[in-house]
Image (cartoon, rainbow, N blue to C red; front, side, top):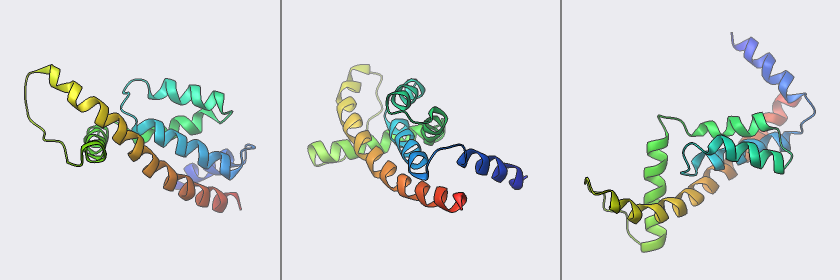
Length: 137
């Protein structure tokens, strides 16, 4: 079974894309996937891939870092990072039915997601580059 997937990966890596292009596409997808704009990841990934002339599938696959299981954790960590950077403290989370309190969390979450996205996408570029070069040989 693994041989079948390895063969697909090898074919994909030999379709005219350099290892750097593959790595950049995955890293860009990771960055977009971490942004808190749920429902827009695919549209953003396709648009950025088209503008930057990257393989749309590679960028889309990179966005899969965000899925129903990981997204709540990504948003929580992003909000905490953003609050720490903006206010010097972690967010004090409270359960409430008041939806107006969401405004308090929006900006820290966006700031934190940008920082978290960079801290994930930069290493993912180098890791993917290493593997793409290894598979290319």
